[in-house]
Length: 262
Image (tube, rainbow, N blue to C red):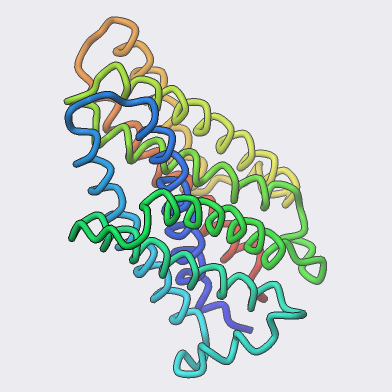
């Protein structure tokens, strides 16, 4: 039993999936944006991804009872989804590091497109390995479709929110597209959380999670009204920040309170 380590596990999975979401949506942004700040924003997004990946990796070590033995987890790649997950994580970190270094210092040995493709592919494979690792038949509370669905929603919600918050002032029209994606993903995350709570027979219980989601849902309405009237984006910033907090809280709920045996 490793209950005390599950918060670090939630941070690892959520931060890593946030990184993958930024990588994928950055690729979209770089191809549909024509703004003068596009290259600067692209490089800034890569630096954010690198920080998030390294931070998530450190939290993954904290999840282990003996962190100094972390690399032993790679011993069973042929049979262990967790070993494959760690390998994919390391490949992603290496790819993003090389990608960012090449862009930052204008090293042109290899095309940045090659690292972009490798990073996107490694990120998608990593999400798949995470789903296989944490959707455990041995733990009935986790063996539910809402778990893999949340691993897909988080990258899109968090990634689109981060990009929106970065470009909202200088590329308002472009930012609006990512905001729409964030709105849709928040609703999907809310529905998924409710479905999972019903599965756990936990929906009738009053707890801070539902209060948090209720406040976020109210702010969503306020944000939509402000957007419709072309008013300040300040409500959007508050809503999206709270939306990220809600999505992360759902991950903590899933991995800590319903899967204590992880």
